[in-house]
Amino acid sequence: MRPPDSLRPIEITRGYLSGSPGSVLYRCGDTVVLCTASFQESVPAWMVGRGKGWVTAEYNMLPNSTSPRKSRERGGKIDGRTTEIQRLIGRSMRAIVDLEALGERSLTVDCDVLQADGGTRTAAITGGFIALADAVSAALPESAIGAGPLRDSVAAVSVGIVDGIPYLDLDYPLDSRAEVDMNVVMTGAGRFVEIQGCGEEATFDHDQLQSLLGLAGRAIIELTQRQRQALATAIR
Image 1: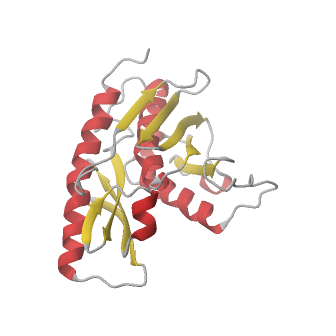
Image 2: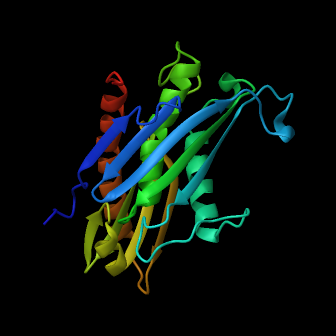
């Protein structure tokens, strides 16, 4: 059984799709997310002439990524959960992008869940950053993390309290039993981007909150290292 303070096994496959400048198949345990990123040489109408770029995201769970089958979202009808998650991914990416350095270009990060076993939004953010970095590198070869549009990296992880014990990186069985459930998004420099947390028919105190944030912070350091190791490897 996985220790409460350990991440699920991670696999990162860059260059997964030949048609996208940034594409990553990101696995954490049995959760699998395909993340792609692409440039557009324009910005939304409300940003034209401001000398800044834009970063946005889309998120979707494919049919049979979970059981029972999830119907496709068609005709512009997107459920509230999907909207909330893709806004979270977009905010997370914009937190580490210098929009002025991007110029009047748009970047879209697409995250499609192929298999869901908890933590799909955090996997989408962590894998989505790698795809974003590859897309930026393809369009602006002289850029690097900390030089050019990318001011830093970003990653995310879930934490929670299950049977009174703080747990890291909740899979579905743990998530379904959690008394407290939290998603933490942080930069590579250790700054918080967003914290989403609540008690599930329970409450939690300050010490438990600090324990969960400590677990998440240590995990983000590990995830950041994994991201940078992956980006340092040539795409096959």
